[in-house]
Length: 250
Image (cartoon, rainbow, N blue to C red):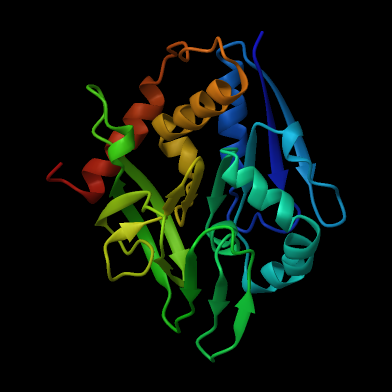
């Protein structure tokens, strides 16, 4: 039997918008396929051992919580996280967890907060929040049966700009995305996937959840080929109804 171990980083501090739902979705979609799942919660003061995990999840939080974990993230876990990312470990990082992987966050007052620098991007704070439903298109998810459109809900004041070697997760169709300017949403680097989309993101978009599971299983097991098909009728209907509501021309 295949097994997936998921590390939920800072679940006690970075769960402002119920983003732990992404972990629940990954677990359930694995269990439905008879794939064993173990979830390990790692927070401040706990050792982060990348070899113990197949998927790492970091959720969103406010500026206050991000400052609390800053020292632990950079000094205690930073080297291991950077190495894991560069060694193709699967990461899913949402909103504040997304920002924390970048170089820095500069508040609108001008204060610059150093972050991990695992990926080449940075975030500039704004007085105006970018709030609302979002639809974006992911080319890497397109198949004969799926057009790659992802739906979520964004709520952030930080404007993120991608640097060298980092690709956007998708192209914005409805909403703001990374910064409300370049029409890009999220970031991809190797097997690290970042997004501003809450929802929880994976509950509305099972194709992305399965992509993460498949990528992690291929990394771990040489004999793994593909995920078994499961009944996604309810998930697909929920996704499609949101797309039609937000983007009626689709």
